[in-house]
Length: 239
Image 1 (cartoon, rainbow, N blue to C red):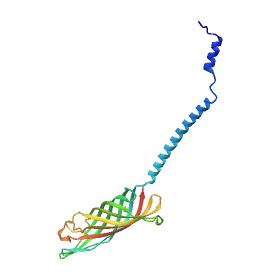
Image 2 (cartoon, rainbow, N blue to C red; image 1 turned 135 degrees about the vertical axis):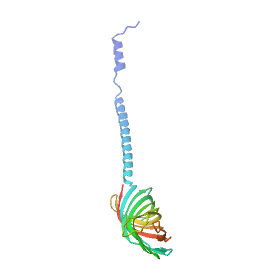
Image 3 (cartoon, helix red, strand yellow; image 1 turned 45 degrees about the vertical axis):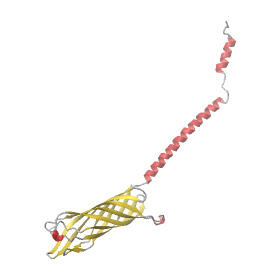
Image 4 (cartoon, rainbow, N blue to C red; image 1 turned 180 degrees about the vertical axis):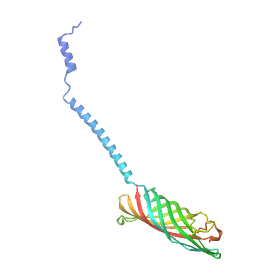
């Protein structure tokens, strides 16, 4: 039986404790460096993509609100022996617009004016002062324009209602006059003029087509369609 001696111990030390080849440590370091570099590059690329995405989202302002002062000029009408005229007045429009894409937006509008309807009939003269509430919704189409002009023209088509609400003013009312809602078609065009980032000035024209109001009174019914011109100007905030 072989006895374990000093020579065997020396051989074991050589087997287990012999220094590794000189290139082994360098190869390990290179592999670790490559792995670290790949992880760092992946993190940088992922961060870059996230920042670009967030930046694009921030720059893409799809929503806007606007406040505009308006004029309200209504065409005279006549029918069934009654002539109707309307006082010219002013008011305001508030709108929210959401841009579906670069060329198309959906819009909701509320407007307010106060005017007086004058009726000339065989039975005599009558007038009704009323608050006019406008509620419309529809689509806005952007019109291409050269970038050097720095404007964004558009056209619009909307539908909704006008609500004529008598004020009850004793000097401008007719007994029995009731609140009346009539359907309205709105068309128009306008342009936005940027002044600072996310803020623009707006100039707009809206045409309103609807049945002339009679406040529920047969004696005031002209049975005609009338037209109101509504020029406006105001400010727009995008977000």
